[in-house]
Length: 163
Ligand SMILES: Nc1nc2c(c(=O)[nH]1)N[C@H]1C(S)=C(S)[C@@H](COP(=O)(O)O)O[C@H]1N2
Ligand SMILES: [Mo]
Image (cartoon, rainbow, N blue to C red; front, side, top):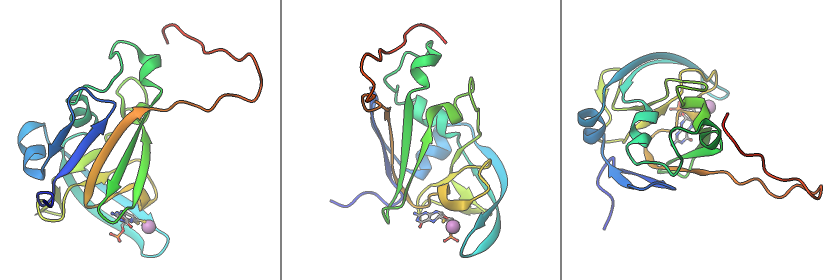
C-alpha cells in the first residue's frame, strides 16, 4: 500500500514512532511563523513565509531515547530528514534543543499561504543561509544517538556525568 499523501514517519530511537500527516501537524501542535530568505547555488536567493509546528515539539512527542533531564545525553543525538526524492539532511538535536542552539526549525504546514497537505511538509531552517536543508516533500524524520567510531588512540574512555 502506498503511503497517505503527505504522510511521513517519525522514527528511530523513540518510544512512540508515528506516521503523521500535514493535518496532524496543523491540529496537534502550536503553529509558528517564519519569514525566511535562503540562497541556492543554482536558483539564487528565495524568500518565503512558512507556518508550522517546531520540529523539536513534534519529535519530543515520540519520546526520543534520552533522559530529558540530562543535557549531555541529549547532545549526542542526530536527526536525518528525508524527502521523497531521496534528498536528506542532518541536524543535531542540540541545534534545535532550547537548552542549546534553540533554532526555531519548523515542519511547515503552509508556504506562502498555500497548504502543504498535497506535497507534504517541508523542513524550514531559518538560521541557514543556504537552502539545502529546506527539505521538501518530507517522508521521514529519523532521530538517534550518534556513536563515534573508536578512536585510533588506545585507552580513550568515555566521559560521564552531567553537563
Ligand atoms: N526533497 C528535496 N528538498 C530540497 C531539495 C531537493 O533536491 N529535494 N533541494 C534543496 C535546495 S538545494 C534548495 S536551494 C531548496 C529550494 O529548492 P527549489 O528551488 O528547487 O525549491 O530546496 C531544498 N530542498
Ligand atoms: Mo540549493
